[in-house]
Length: 67
Image (cartoon, rainbow, N blue to C red; front, side, top):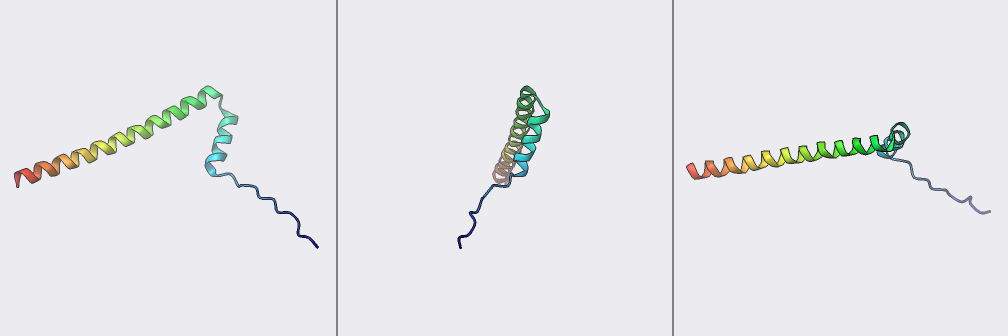
């Protein structure tokens, strides 16, 4: 007796599911605008993190020179 063939189907991730819903609800232009806006938010966060790090390095350098 042979075993039945196994069918492997990938379970979609939450991101995939959200993108599917997004594609049903929004037109292409709205989807692009939303993704561009989110990319801008992430880039702003990265720049803010870089500014904080640069300030910390600067303040450490000033503290070292005055000690």
